[in-house]
Length: 229
Image (cartoon, rainbow, N blue to C red):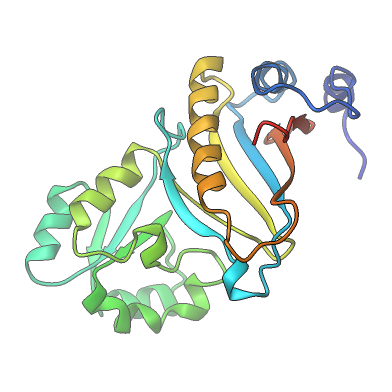
C-alpha cells in the first residue's frame, strides 16, 4: 500500500521499534494527524485469545468519560410504554415490526447503535443477516438488550462504546478525536484499558495483551507499552 507524502512525513516521527508510554503515544498520535478533518483516534489491541472458543470470546461495553466526539444515532425497538420512554430519553428512531421491511428491503440504516427490549428480540432476530455483519445486533453483554432503555440511550449518547474481538482476535475501538486535549484522550484510553483488562477470559492461558497500537484515521500507528497492563 502506497502512502502519500503527508503520511510518510508523519511516519518519520514514529520509531516503529519503540513501545511508547501512553502519554507519549497520545502526544505523537496528535502530532501525526495531518488530515484536514477531525480524525478519530483509535486503539487496536491484539490479544492472545482464540475467539473460536466461546470461553475466550471478549465482548462488552464501556462509557468513555469524555465521549467519542461523535454524534451517535440510536434506534430502539420497543413497544407499549417503552416507546415513550425511549423517545423521552432522546432516541433518534423508535419502532417495532414496521421497521423490518424498511431495513430489510429498502436498506435503511440511518443509525449507529440498536437497542431493544427483551420482548422485541424475536422481531429483531429477523434482521440478523443485515445487522449481524455490521456489528449492529443488540446484545445483553453490551447492555443493548435491556428494559431500561432510558439508561441505555443516555449511556450511548454520553460516549458508551462496544468492544469485541474481530476474526483476527484484535479489538478495534475509538477513544476520541484528534481535537481532544491529551488529558481527555488519556482518561478515555485508561477507562477502556481498565475494562479490557477486567474482561480477560479465565480460560486463557499465556499472554493476554500482545500489542496495543494507537492511530488516527489517516495516520501511522504508534505502539503503546503493554507491560503496564
